[in-house]
Image (cartoon, rainbow, N blue to C red):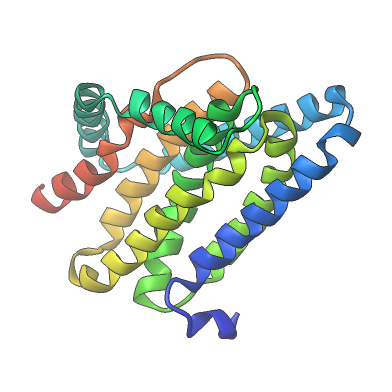
Length: 232
Protein backbone atom coordinates (compact mmCIF):
# COMPACT_ATOMS: atom_id res chain seq x y z
CA UNK A 1 0.00 0.00 0.00
CA UNK A 2 3.04 2.28 0.35
CA UNK A 3 3.11 3.16 -3.35
CA UNK A 4 -0.41 4.63 -3.04
CA UNK A 5 0.43 6.59 0.13
CA UNK A 6 2.56 9.01 -1.84
CA UNK A 7 -0.12 9.60 -4.47
CA UNK A 8 -2.67 12.38 -3.78
CA UNK A 9 -6.08 10.71 -3.28
CA UNK A 10 -4.41 7.39 -4.14
CA UNK A 11 -7.10 5.37 -2.37
CA UNK A 12 -9.84 6.99 -4.45
CA UNK A 13 -7.90 6.35 -7.67
CA UNK A 14 -7.61 2.65 -6.75
CA UNK A 15 -11.32 2.52 -5.87
CA UNK A 16 -12.34 4.09 -9.18
CA UNK A 17 -10.05 1.76 -11.15
CA UNK A 18 -11.50 -1.30 -9.37
CA UNK A 19 -15.07 -0.26 -10.19
CA UNK A 20 -14.16 0.46 -13.82
CA UNK A 21 -12.48 -2.95 -14.15
CA UNK A 22 -15.29 -4.82 -12.40
CA UNK A 23 -17.97 -2.99 -14.36
CA UNK A 24 -16.20 -3.71 -17.65
CA UNK A 25 -16.00 -7.40 -16.78
CA UNK A 26 -19.68 -7.38 -15.86
CA UNK A 27 -20.64 -5.87 -19.22
CA UNK A 28 -18.43 -8.31 -21.11
CA UNK A 29 -19.47 -11.42 -19.20
CA UNK A 30 -23.04 -10.44 -18.33
CA UNK A 31 -24.56 -12.38 -21.22
CA UNK A 32 -22.80 -15.54 -20.03
CA UNK A 33 -24.18 -15.22 -16.50
CA UNK A 34 -27.66 -16.80 -16.19
CA UNK A 35 -30.30 -14.25 -15.24
CA UNK A 36 -31.28 -16.47 -12.32
CA UNK A 37 -27.72 -16.37 -10.92
CA UNK A 38 -27.34 -12.67 -11.61
CA UNK A 39 -30.56 -11.90 -9.71
CA UNK A 40 -29.43 -14.08 -6.81
CA UNK A 41 -26.06 -12.32 -6.57
CA UNK A 42 -27.79 -8.96 -6.88
CA UNK A 43 -30.05 -9.83 -3.95
CA UNK A 44 -27.03 -11.05 -1.98
CA UNK A 45 -25.45 -7.63 -2.46
CA UNK A 46 -28.71 -6.12 -1.22
CA UNK A 47 -28.72 -8.33 1.89
CA UNK A 48 -25.07 -7.54 2.61
CA UNK A 49 -25.76 -3.82 2.18
CA UNK A 50 -28.78 -4.09 4.47
CA UNK A 51 -26.77 -5.79 7.22
CA UNK A 52 -23.91 -3.32 6.82
CA UNK A 53 -26.30 -0.42 7.25
CA UNK A 54 -27.92 -1.96 10.34
CA UNK A 55 -24.51 -2.58 11.92
CA UNK A 56 -23.41 1.00 11.32
CA UNK A 57 -26.72 2.46 12.50
CA UNK A 58 -26.62 0.50 15.77
CA UNK A 59 -23.41 2.33 16.73
CA UNK A 60 -25.37 5.58 16.92
CA UNK A 61 -24.65 7.67 20.01
CA UNK A 62 -25.96 11.18 19.28
CA UNK A 63 -29.45 10.14 18.15
CA UNK A 64 -30.77 13.72 18.20
CA UNK A 65 -27.97 15.02 15.96
CA UNK A 66 -28.34 12.13 13.52
CA UNK A 67 -32.15 12.33 13.35
CA UNK A 68 -32.14 16.12 12.97
CA UNK A 69 -29.55 15.86 10.18
CA UNK A 70 -31.55 13.15 8.42
CA UNK A 71 -34.88 15.04 8.56
CA UNK A 72 -33.47 18.47 7.70
CA UNK A 73 -31.32 16.93 4.98
CA UNK A 74 -34.40 15.27 3.48
CA UNK A 75 -36.28 18.59 3.46
CA UNK A 76 -33.40 20.37 1.75
CA UNK A 77 -32.84 17.52 -0.69
CA UNK A 78 -36.52 17.43 -1.63
CA UNK A 79 -36.54 21.21 -2.10
CA UNK A 80 -33.45 20.98 -4.34
CA UNK A 81 -34.91 17.91 -6.11
CA UNK A 82 -31.58 16.11 -5.80
CA UNK A 83 -33.01 12.69 -6.64
CA UNK A 84 -34.64 14.01 -9.81
CA UNK A 85 -31.43 15.81 -10.78
CA UNK A 86 -29.25 12.72 -10.32
CA UNK A 87 -31.71 10.67 -12.34
CA UNK A 88 -31.67 13.43 -14.94
CA UNK A 89 -27.87 13.27 -15.05
CA UNK A 90 -28.11 9.55 -15.72
CA UNK A 91 -30.57 10.17 -18.57
CA UNK A 92 -28.30 12.90 -19.96
CA UNK A 93 -25.26 10.61 -19.99
CA UNK A 94 -27.33 7.90 -21.63
CA UNK A 95 -28.41 10.27 -24.41
CA UNK A 96 -24.98 11.89 -24.76
CA UNK A 97 -23.21 8.59 -25.38
CA UNK A 98 -26.06 7.11 -27.45
CA UNK A 99 -26.38 4.09 -25.20
CA UNK A 100 -28.92 1.36 -25.84
CA UNK A 101 -32.23 1.24 -24.04
CA UNK A 102 -32.10 -0.41 -20.66
CA UNK A 103 -31.85 0.37 -16.96
CA UNK A 104 -28.95 2.82 -17.46
CA UNK A 105 -30.20 5.46 -15.04
CA UNK A 106 -31.07 2.87 -12.39
CA UNK A 107 -27.55 1.44 -12.67
CA UNK A 108 -25.95 4.89 -12.49
CA UNK A 109 -27.97 6.02 -9.46
CA UNK A 110 -27.78 2.69 -7.60
CA UNK A 111 -24.02 2.33 -8.07
CA UNK A 112 -23.35 5.98 -7.21
CA UNK A 113 -25.27 5.74 -3.94
CA UNK A 114 -24.00 2.26 -3.04
CA UNK A 115 -20.34 3.16 -3.60
CA UNK A 116 -20.44 6.72 -2.23
CA UNK A 117 -22.47 6.48 0.96
CA UNK A 118 -21.11 4.82 4.05
CA UNK A 119 -18.41 4.83 6.66
CA UNK A 120 -15.78 3.25 4.41
CA UNK A 121 -16.17 6.00 1.81
CA UNK A 122 -16.22 8.80 4.38
CA UNK A 123 -13.70 7.53 6.93
CA UNK A 124 -11.50 6.02 4.21
CA UNK A 125 -11.31 9.31 2.31
CA UNK A 126 -10.60 11.20 5.52
CA UNK A 127 -7.84 8.75 6.52
CA UNK A 128 -6.32 9.13 3.07
CA UNK A 129 -6.23 12.89 3.54
CA UNK A 130 -5.21 13.08 7.20
CA UNK A 131 -2.79 10.18 7.56
CA UNK A 132 -2.02 9.40 3.93
CA UNK A 133 -3.32 5.90 4.65
CA UNK A 134 -5.36 4.46 1.75
CA UNK A 135 -5.95 1.06 3.42
CA UNK A 136 -9.70 1.52 3.95
CA UNK A 137 -10.30 2.77 0.43
CA UNK A 138 -8.25 -0.06 -1.05
CA UNK A 139 -10.38 -2.54 0.91
CA UNK A 140 -13.51 -0.72 -0.23
CA UNK A 141 -12.20 -0.81 -3.80
CA UNK A 142 -11.91 -4.59 -3.73
CA UNK A 143 -15.48 -4.94 -2.40
CA UNK A 144 -16.84 -2.39 -4.88
CA UNK A 145 -14.98 -4.04 -7.75
CA UNK A 146 -16.61 -7.41 -7.06
CA UNK A 147 -20.04 -5.83 -6.59
CA UNK A 148 -19.70 -3.83 -9.83
CA UNK A 149 -19.25 -7.04 -11.86
CA UNK A 150 -22.74 -8.20 -10.96
CA UNK A 151 -24.31 -4.74 -10.85
CA UNK A 152 -23.10 -4.02 -14.39
CA UNK A 153 -24.19 -7.47 -15.52
CA UNK A 154 -27.70 -6.73 -14.24
CA UNK A 155 -28.07 -2.95 -14.67
CA UNK A 156 -25.77 -2.19 -17.60
CA UNK A 157 -23.23 0.56 -18.39
CA UNK A 158 -24.69 3.09 -15.97
CA UNK A 159 -22.60 1.39 -13.28
CA UNK A 160 -19.39 2.36 -15.11
CA UNK A 161 -20.37 6.03 -15.24
CA UNK A 162 -20.74 6.08 -11.44
CA UNK A 163 -16.95 6.48 -11.23
CA UNK A 164 -17.40 10.18 -12.10
CA UNK A 165 -19.33 11.25 -8.96
CA UNK A 166 -17.34 8.76 -6.87
CA UNK A 167 -14.04 10.35 -7.91
CA UNK A 168 -15.37 13.84 -7.17
CA UNK A 169 -16.98 12.85 -3.86
CA UNK A 170 -14.18 10.80 -2.30
CA UNK A 171 -11.43 12.96 -3.79
CA UNK A 172 -13.17 16.05 -2.47
CA UNK A 173 -13.49 14.54 1.02
CA UNK A 174 -9.79 13.69 1.01
CA UNK A 175 -8.82 17.25 0.10
CA UNK A 176 -11.31 18.65 2.62
CA UNK A 177 -9.88 16.45 5.38
CA UNK A 178 -6.45 18.00 4.89
CA UNK A 179 -7.89 21.43 5.78
CA UNK A 180 -10.35 20.33 8.49
CA UNK A 181 -8.08 18.20 10.68
CA UNK A 182 -8.77 20.17 13.92
CA UNK A 183 -12.54 19.55 13.67
CA UNK A 184 -12.57 15.83 12.81
CA UNK A 185 -13.15 14.35 16.27
CA UNK A 186 -14.11 10.77 17.17
CA UNK A 187 -17.65 11.96 17.93
CA UNK A 188 -17.95 13.40 14.45
CA UNK A 189 -16.67 10.15 12.93
CA UNK A 190 -19.35 8.23 14.86
CA UNK A 191 -22.20 10.51 13.80
CA UNK A 192 -21.13 10.45 10.15
CA UNK A 193 -20.90 6.67 10.26
CA UNK A 194 -24.34 6.29 11.90
CA UNK A 195 -26.03 8.58 9.38
CA UNK A 196 -24.25 6.83 6.53
CA UNK A 197 -25.46 3.53 7.97
CA UNK A 198 -29.09 4.62 7.84
CA UNK A 199 -28.66 5.62 4.20
CA UNK A 200 -26.96 2.32 3.39
CA UNK A 201 -29.89 0.54 5.04
CA UNK A 202 -32.15 2.36 2.60
CA UNK A 203 -29.95 1.31 -0.33
CA UNK A 204 -30.25 -2.31 0.78
CA UNK A 205 -34.04 -2.07 0.93
CA UNK A 206 -34.11 -0.56 -2.57
CA UNK A 207 -31.77 -3.22 -3.96
CA UNK A 208 -34.06 -5.93 -2.60
CA UNK A 209 -37.03 -4.23 -4.24
CA UNK A 210 -38.78 -3.68 -0.91
CA UNK A 211 -38.90 0.13 -1.17
CA UNK A 212 -38.29 2.95 -3.63
CA UNK A 213 -36.73 5.48 -1.29
CA UNK A 214 -35.38 8.70 -2.84
CA UNK A 215 -32.04 8.42 -1.08
CA UNK A 216 -30.37 11.20 -3.06
CA UNK A 217 -32.66 13.64 -1.26
CA UNK A 218 -31.06 12.60 2.04
CA UNK A 219 -27.49 13.49 1.00
CA UNK A 220 -27.50 17.05 2.48
CA UNK A 221 -27.74 15.33 5.87
CA UNK A 222 -24.08 14.33 5.56
CA UNK A 223 -23.08 18.00 5.59
CA UNK A 224 -25.63 18.92 8.25
CA UNK A 225 -24.46 16.24 10.68
CA UNK A 226 -21.00 17.81 10.62
CA UNK A 227 -22.42 21.26 11.39
CA UNK A 228 -24.83 20.04 14.08
CA UNK A 229 -22.19 17.89 15.79
CA UNK A 230 -19.76 20.80 15.93
CA UNK A 231 -22.43 23.15 17.33
CA UNK A 232 -23.85 20.77 19.99
